[in-house]
Amino acid sequence: MKSISQNDKRGVVYIFWGNKAETFLKRSVRSLQIHHPHLPIHYHRVASPVPGRELREKIRMKSISPFQTTLYLDIDTIVMGNLDYAFEQAERFGLACAINECPWMRRYCQPGEEDHTEYNTGVMSFTSAAGAVFDAWEMLESTTTSASSWAMPDRSPRGSAYDDQASFARALRMCNFNPFVLPVNFNYRPDFSPRAFAPLKVWHDYRNPPAGLVELSSACERGERPVTLFDINVIAPPRPNPNDPPPTQASQIESE
Image (tube, rainbow, N blue to C red; front, side):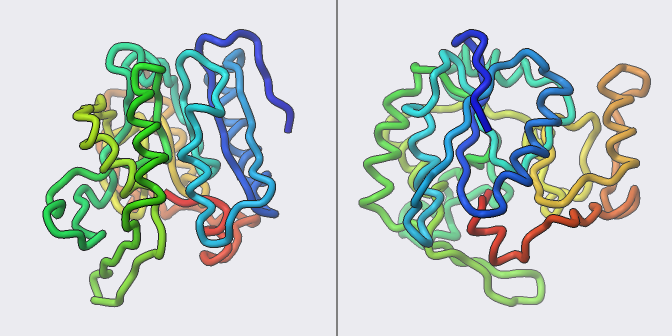
């Protein structure tokens, strides 16, 4: 895909890799252009990522971006509403993102940082005012532990050998930088927040959102319905995407 660039003030950056990445990238771009048809987009394909450490490429998003104010989106996102608020808060505070679904650094098992906040790097807006954070993020990525360990309700173990969010959280702390915290509807993760309020701004999942949720969110966004509490398991489970890769492949395409 070619980059779309009409001006360099505000724009969206996608960083992607893997054989099936473009399927999800195109889905995200289509949804973005419904709500922001004139917003410039910059695409960055990683030609040869290091196996198992693909997420480290996201750390370069600031240097990759040609925009003054950037909104970075993971490829497994679907834009469901206007995103001006995310740009505005980045321009006010330098950096805006949501707290991660696992909100603490506890899953990285490093003494002294158990209660530090973890942020989700899949939807982030930023300006050059946060430049020191991105410099520290890149430095810490190669010098600190990023393996995670956690459990499901049935006690089955989960985790990953590498996660870019650990070094991002440490970079924020090192720089004494407090990002503006976007509400959950700007980075909605259905498996972890089954109940939330519509309208949603960004759906963050490889599966497609339920048709009923799309209709509800759109009606709330247009002001035709009030802010409405929904339950993803009641309105309907997320619809499978026929192009979904198996979970092991999905983790190689993108992550949180």
